[in-house]
Image 1 (cartoon, rainbow, N blue to C red):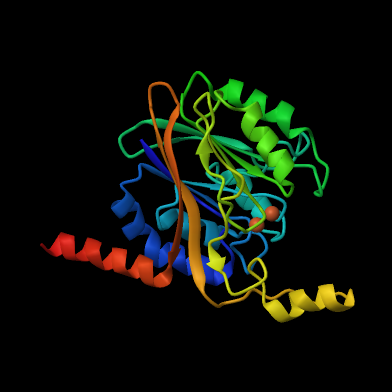
Image 2 (image 1 turned 45 degrees about the vertical axis):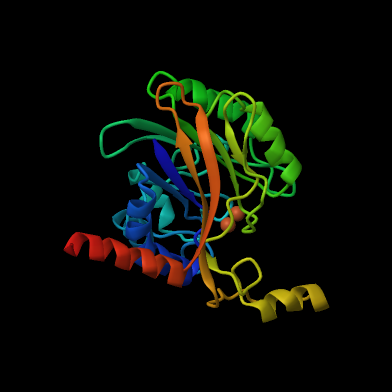
Length: 275
Ligand SMILES: [Fe+2]
Ligand SMILES: [Fe+2]
């Protein structure tokens, strides 16, 4: 089966790429399931019910998140009733929402999705390494194909998670830095790995935000208000191919599409339907 994982969707420019481009892209790539990190979908910080529902409507099957998940107040109610929106599984017991979900492809094949968050240069929550194993064990009987979104800052912690889970899951994909890395590979025991899937949002920016106020923080050390940027929106992510029976990854490739690339694919799909 083929799975598309989409890196952090940032603000309206990111959402528009998904709304206009995802249906054509998913057809073109012939993917069976789409997973997207939605932690920055609402103006760069958090996600709301309206926004989450719209992403699901556009063809995202499961949404993962990270440190920004709690930014919008209405998410607490939304995440309680929407199992397809995940928060990191290693938040302490009693926190609303869940950190894993077993999705079904259109033809009824199961895919497990787990979201955990790193602790290096981030808020220190429960141990992601211990928690992720528990989550994997809990879904093992239901699916061989398992995707782990490891939302973390430090490349060392992310690479460590890749090796830790090699042979235990199908894909370990990093999110959070918003910069796509070029280290995608299949580890020796069959787990596909990439340190960061990148960002689905405005790339003429500082990790999704307007350059001026972000740069000002570095120049003068004073607080300034981050505003989501708009320029040069691109959809970033990875596509993997997996063996359903073993759960091993067979291939992983990075993707990065402009609005124009996505529009061309959408038109091709429409032409094929007409023909
Ligand atoms: Fe993010
Ligand atoms: Fe993040």
